[in-house]
Image 1 (cartoon, rainbow, N blue to C red):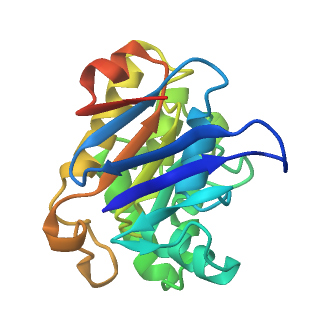
Image 2 (cartoon, rainbow, N blue to C red):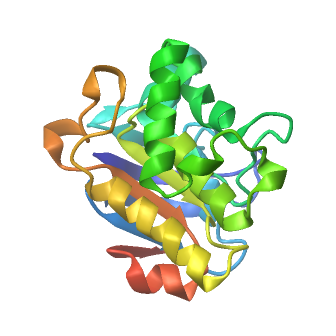
Length: 228
């Protein structure tokens, strides 16, 4: 269970605070869309949830444990093993084949290269881009690149997936494919080919998926909407 409790954030001391003491629980097995006008902090909230930014007040809780203001080594360990992130522009290394980008978080988390690559290929097959595993990002479409980015977020079998405007630069058909992959990630029973066949979250409830978006298509198909 991912939650925030009394959350506020400011980029500088004495600066404007975002979120105004937000408390919210993000439900495992469901896709939550975070929406609101530009400047309300949709992307910032994802970076706070992803433990890349530290709250000014309040905290981020994971399975009831406060982790938002934990020491850097603790937050790094939680990010490596429990959280996957999907960026708006895929952010794939143009100098390497896409499979290498997919497996990078697993190698960082200490997986063997053999297991990580098997897991990465299985995920790419699941989202329909397995044939592109050995292509470079410049040789695949934007929609394919974003599905690769979803695979990278899923490779370690994390319990939380955070996606920042993942459909923002895509046409409707490709946006539908990416959203379908994220929805499947929320409800999927087992992570395919992962280390020790990682379960889908505490109690088998599914992954928590949070999408920052202004896309009406995503809002229409999300299970829950959090308006900032």
